[in-house]
Each structure stands twice: as structure tokens, then as C-alpha cells.
Image 1 (cartoon, helix red, strand yellow):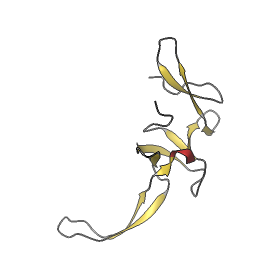
Image 2 (spheres, one colour):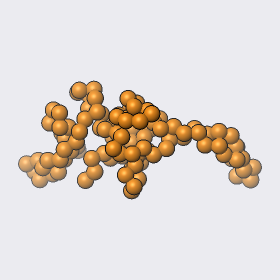
Image 3 (cartoon, rainbow, N blue to C red):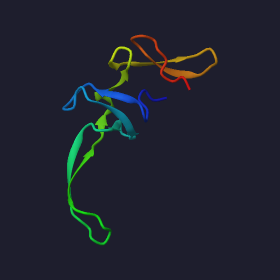
Length: 106
């Protein structure tokens, strides 16, 4: 089970975009995450008339290290550490370490 998953609300804790929040769009296998509106880079693309693709400067998200983001805790309004515990019915869930609130209810 991963600490940070797709569609989690995260906050950047280190780097150029420190303090920005966004949803995780994708987790890659090399320990990086693609976060919505975080770590934006400009890509210079050449147009391709046969496919109808226009050229120019495109701004898109680049992957960010998982160590530089933390799950956002809406109660404390900060990034928080994640722990794992098993419930009485045997399910393994994630929880916030600061206030023991369970994240995965479903």
C-alpha cells in the first residue's frame, strides 16, 4: 500500500513550489508524482500541420519527487505524515499521524 495515491490532496513541502496544493494525477514507478498545477515547466513544441497540432510554448506539469510532497490534512490545514493500521474488520487503512484520523473510509 502506498502512502500517497492518485486523487489525493497534497501540499508541496520543499522546492520551488513550496506551499502549493493540488491533486495527484499520476504516480510513476520511479518515486515521482504528477500533481495538478505544481512544478509547471514550459515545453517548446514544433507544429505539425498533418496532425493539426499547433506549435508554440506549452506549459505542463512535470513530475515531482514523492519526498517533496505530503498529504494535506484538512483538520490541521498542513501537510501531515501518514501511518498504516489495521481496523477490527481486518482492513488496512492509512491515517494521519498528528490526529489519528483515518483517511481511507471506503
